[in-house]
Image 1: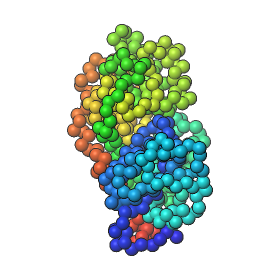
Image 2: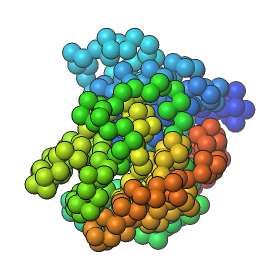
Image 3: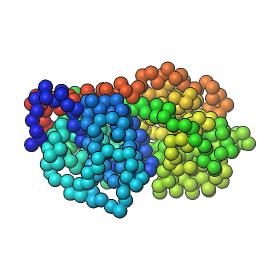
Image 4: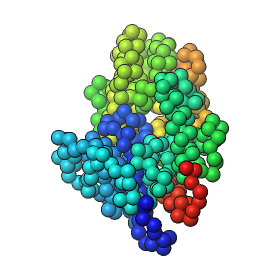
Length: 406
């Protein structure tokens, strides 16, 4: 059993939180959820170490990326799996203490005196009924667009969503839209679900602008930007079809299109599509980029085009407002809750209409530049405070004997 402490004792020390991000990998394959976790963790370490002691559970390959944990407090990293020839401190010497767990014992959280387990990908192998769990569920994609996922993944998500909604003390999601979807689709208890936005655009203020990648260095301010991985619901195939029509209509003045997705199998399929359409000189797949380069991509683009069919939040929408870029986006219900009212609506159902929207964004861009004051609704420190409040609530619910679901 986890060590029992009084509320006064608890208040005298930081809350010990096991933060499980064991599904996170190096590079950009995880998409926005990686930015989400890193920015919140950085904020916690830098500003809230008096309230939290973080025990990060992760794979060894991402450890060099966690140097920000030394900004404050006494945080620790727990590596699930055996030590490999790879030595994290060879890449980043400024790291907190590292612990390796080739086969974690069942009572690991109790041994560490953990107060709350945070499942950063919705579920955790570290779960024990003795420690309250807060689960992050970022979307309900598999119910809204099941065709975007393999059938076995849809079945898997159905199973674990139901399980986590039952056994978790609290469940975090990214938007009021997602919260309502969890209630409607799974009969979730509204009192167990809380919303934390993902305002991570401020990270660009920490880095100097880099250079555009060589393949697009010749087109500053003359390209649409679409920063998204090549997942089916991101709608790259339809965007490329529409761009071909737009490029034919706009002729020599046509803006280029820059895609930043991780080059997985679907990315390779889009590369083939681009080649078949004869657009390799106009559509550029540049893959995952580091922060200075990504900042340059934003600073020097013409506008954001965002035809995604489904989002749990929509981080690039806030990024576009941060850089004061004109924006065209799909009418996904979640995006309309986040976006500036000045954004242009993208009709994604028909490629001809989508092509027409690209022409409009090209020629009338100034009318679709969001107001930066719209960002005032979203601040990372405030969302971090809200998150800490909920983590403490989870700890207190169990301490006070509130009935658990399992």
